[in-house]
Length: 269
Image (cartoon, rainbow, N blue to C red):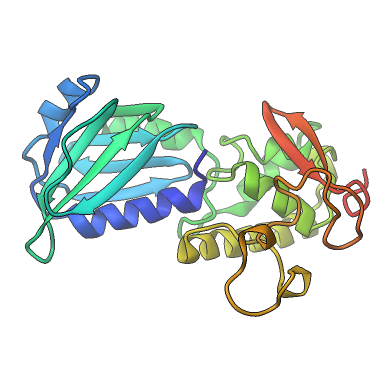
């Protein structure tokens, strides 16, 4: 599932290409036909993300998209290709340089038109998004510190913290040597302050690079140049491989329906 940095990049890209312009909205698949008809031809005012949610404002009507596990956007310039398969929604407009631009949405969990009141209700259910200006990390910690639930599960709870997914969960916990099985109430103020600051840094780097890189140069096979794919993470999808720091085999278990990765030595319970 795309994590917060991906939605932030998508929102910025779509705002650059479509904001301030009338957008031709269609639903080749037909499942979003009524919503497309409502938005078609109207000017897009803004696009923003919050956590794993994307919002596009067309006046008082707001398009809400949640990609879920299988959703994806594809964007291009010029004439769009003929619609194929389960194409939920297509945008077309005249681009900033005068050429045509388009974006296709496939397989989202949610693609719906909401009122501003309904958008506010979604946002009220979400925890702080580390990528939002002036996000309050303390609000997340108050939920975490009051819970006996394992911190590895709490970090995936979007009502506690918005935008963190499986990769950032595993990597953040490793970077701070925290067992994913530690109860939330075992994460004190000082530790959470370090974790929050680090999370903001990692997410911003993800926005900048378009990928998640969490390893430090001294823990990679080469310390300079582009970071290789197999050097990008400490524990995520490294089951059975040696920990980059201590050499212990990385382990995997299931937590909140997703694979969890950790080093039993560096992240001892």
